[in-house]
Length: 86
Image (cartoon, rainbow, N blue to C red):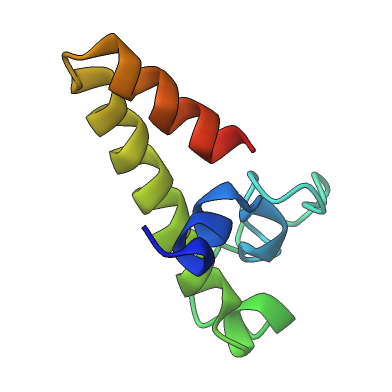
């Protein structure tokens, strides 16, 4: 796996989510309830396309973790987990 793909899978994508997504660490819990994430949103992350990329990275990270859990060989599982955590 190329190094740049590993870096994408190791990164923390949550700060790049829509500002109105509760998973974003900068989310303001006092946001009015009528504002929904990604609903004609023009926050910096949505406007610049970072939200879509962050959602895609979260999806890839989830799929990779599921694939590692399904791996029957414990040595390969350990190698992949070490590779992602380094």
